[in-house]
Length: 168
Image 1 (cartoon, rainbow, N blue to C red):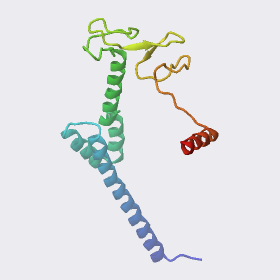
Image 2: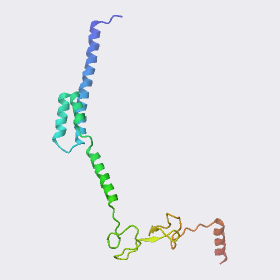
Image 3: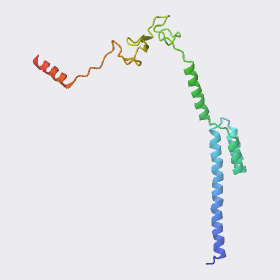
Image 4: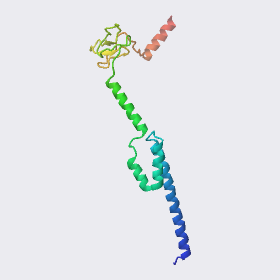
């Protein structure tokens, strides 16, 4: 059950070689990851190089220092946030414009006072304003007069129609 000194030395050499290889691979991966990460966070050309050099020279302490000092948001996150803010501002400041003359109109106007373009119509049942393109009032579910209704025929109606065609 005794282990030979030469066998033990060779196991230690193999184990330490694997460990050193792992540490070197980790070191290079951290340098590459740092370079890619900082490139996604800044437009400056010098900062990715300096951050990578810091991680290359200081290894794990340099990587931890980079994690502390790096910008919190990526450029993509900043872009998305600006798009969201712009969309919110547009919805807040959205102005109703007349399709005929492009002048500002109120949401509850039925007709443009400048060019007399019809903007909305009122429901015959409940009296609320509805869009011109709507086929049904969303408030009281009344069909809008003058719009085409779907006609559903029963099978007996179709039989009667076919009999009429034959008789003629």
